[in-house]
Image (cartoon, rainbow over all chains, first blue to last red; front, side, top):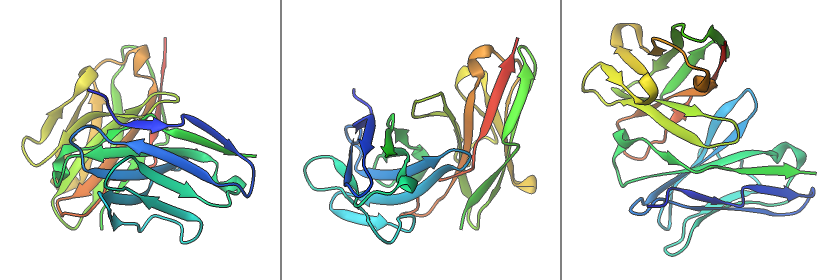
Length: 115
Length: 114
């Protein structure tokens, strides 16, 4: 039973390029969450999605960042026109539907480096 | 709104010593509380969780945590540290409302010396 799959594990982009991060939730999980981790800052919540719906995007920067979780396929976090400050580890997590006490299962993350 | 504060960004113990990692929470509703561990270059792994059942929660790898409502705390302990416990530990809270996400503390790095 595969866990949460994130790819790529490492991504290098030049300033101004686009970064696309993919997340496939655990089988049977319909809720997906994206977090960003910077050194000394812990994990910052970005966005919470269900299939074809954004539930909470209060942690997403207003510009350049977007997320989707289509009916078919993985969830995608897209960062347009990347800047050096976007360099971080991005983690995806998933959980079953509406079971807040379940806790999340995390992927291994995508480490984005902007050069 | 929910939040957690982890006291001490770095904790160092000797192998065999007691591990105590502190977490205080703030929540306007009865909270669910979690501890996660992260090893270098890996994702987060759930250690244990409190979901309003027993206040003393036992987790994996010999860790446990006690929910104290009067102190708004959920400290993580282990009686005897092992070298393999060296990692970063995150406390997290979620309110029991639909449509909310886990909120994490800034993390505590645990170092274990021989």
